[in-house]
Image (cartoon, rainbow, N blue to C red; front, side, top):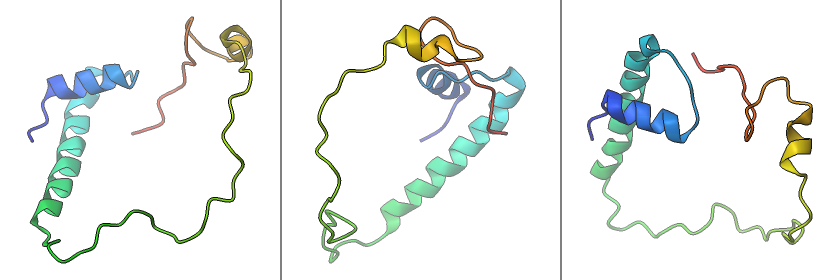
Length: 95
């Protein structure tokens, strides 16, 4: 799969990421390296490998996941230093 600037822009939009056009080339190259690495997995012979359904034989000891009342969006965003009307706005953390 060839990663293009259009794919980078669409992915950034879907993930609600913002970055300058000067970063697009670096991000495009990084994504291409990741895709190429994952493509190498198709070369692995898995003919006699049993499918793995779980990494552990442990039984889930956590509580049942039961719906509970949620915090209203207005209250959740009240103490956020930066936000738009629907989500938190955070500084860029990936170089």
